[in-house]
Length: 388
Image 1 (cartoon, rainbow, N blue to C red):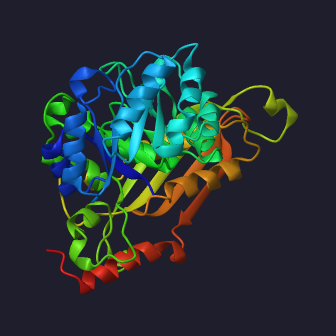
Image 2: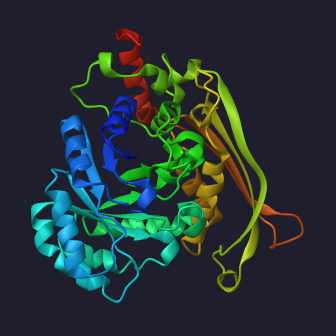
């Protein structure tokens, strides 16, 4: 389950984020750099206002990579009662010293290392963070306005970052000028959290105040956790419907068809020895049969993005040589069907360089009955509860 982290500037914005359903309230001063730290008094006041309704985090500032400086800042922020302290790890010959200097602090509070996608992050430092007892690691961008996270690192690299964190027992988070259309593209990578500031603000300006409508859009794009103790009274079924969960059975829902057609890419594929030596062209035609949401909100919450299909193709191909086109088709179907709104998918993959014309495979895969249990659970609760 991916959590939503909302960066706020104090108690007032924290309350707005809580009302919208943010999972983590993150304290930051957007006017003071990528990881601008707020005064301790504001952090403490916000922790009191949140009153343990959600987890909290706070950044230590854009600090030079000097071990004592960073350690003291982390300890000072931890003393404010915050749950997680985020520490920027900037490119430096002393980065490992800084991480090592935080080992004792990590025994007393949960530390999260923040690496920067636009500053050539050194992923080997993830191992050093794990050895020092850090709780997690995140990717962000240092130069706001220089592009979004996915402008700097491709999906395969992000997937590898998450996998490396998880292999070392660390929480893995992604942030960095993320926008609403980025959410469905990043969720399949299964990060533990996605962090936002600009996308939650008026006109996308991270220095302006939070916009409740924008916060609601981002919240609506990230499936929320439901406690096993939850009742129907605290479930917002309008958001559920926007995510594709509708009352009744899936077969009763009207559907849309989202497609990517005649998408030609070069890839390493094939079982013959000569196919190991060079790339060849593949043509993809993919159609996803998608449950149509009941509500028309007029934003990204209403749609299953075709970017999800394109990204799935590029991610699988980027992982390395593929022996069988049939396996490629099955893996692609699996990725597309991970979105609960997709009821079925048609996939046609053609190899264009083997002979005049094309050869390939075409498959149809549908959501298994057992994978529809989540939808049925939501439907049952909706029928017995009061959606408001």
